Length: 498
Image (cartoon, rainbow, N blue to C red; front, side, top):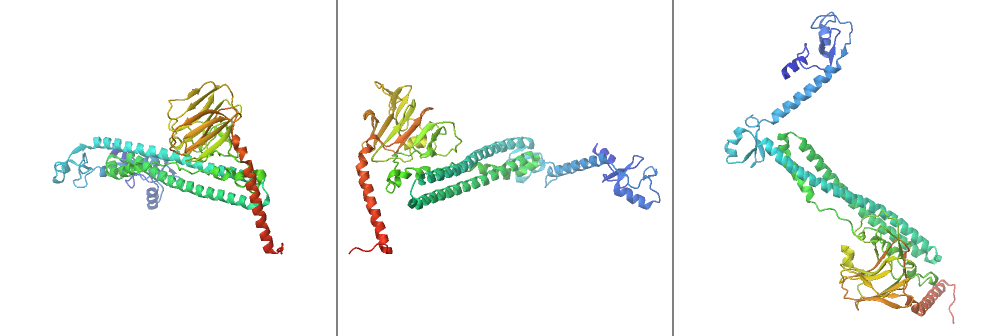
């Protein structure tokens, strides 16, 4: 059938497959160049087959015949190449078997040769099926790896965007607070902004490098997938010949370690904003704002919204935040920015009219593992009931005989004496005390529902420190005046007393 088709598609002049076929009014077709050469030899423009005269010097192109010939030539070339690949290079016999020991296609003569003595053989079709399935399994592993890399890259992109948002917000808050200060504090303001920008630059650079490295891995995995898919579409013999190379590449990449989220990637907002005005309190007494605990926004649940000064938290609409390792998204809570491993610490929390809150401390183990029972000592208020939870209890234990609704809770932690106490700030009455051995770093723990926010404030007895604060401020003022007088005297503005 192929021979008959080839004859029908052959030019009557050159006896080869038509090239740029044209047809005459008599319906006979010829190669364009063959017809021109024929006419140059004749005095009249006539059909080389039926000798009928042609009135036009430029016959029309036979597009249908041209397309048919092109398809026929491509198919013939493909079959020719396939037939040459299917033949044994040593014996010119058809390759019908696959040698499992040499991992290569062989013919029947090869099977009986000395070089394949005692070898194991399988039919080509069975070997192809088994190896295709194996390669498809490897392909799925690479595809799963690619999906994981894409997910992590997406989180990196979100982290990089959030770094910019954090940096902008932090800079705005720093400037807002520094505007309240006198001009001589301008240098300190600029120093803090510079530190923030340097951290932003460094952490943005880290994210950029991580993202670029991940992009390179994704590109490499994509290349492996593309090469593997091309191998799977190849002819059987070609597939088996290239199988080892493709499968080695496909198996190598999934062995790479999974990408990990970068701990500490976000801006340390608490470092820049925490107790900012308290730090410069010695210079600006009237600007003092001493919050004993600062909330860490990098640990906050996406539903929790922190105030600009990081001293209050409320429940709100879920925010689109990166999944950084520090963030606790399993429980609706936020931790303090500083952990304690020794000493005595206290902070007050204004709960107001909130009907759903939890206060206390969380161990570093809970922070890292997000396990509710691994290290949590808390006081909970919900459904007009107070209850407590510790690692030794199987769940929340209700505190009976408490009818009062507390407005402010003072929390006292004595790490060395292994004691954590909760007090009613209005009456200085102890609500509950945990007496347990602390071994890990402890972080202040806060959780609130959908109503009133929780606000951190100094504990009630902090007012007893007022005389000490006054003395320190007075001494600092004396030192400042003395330093200023010395500088003026050195410049000649003040004369020495005699």
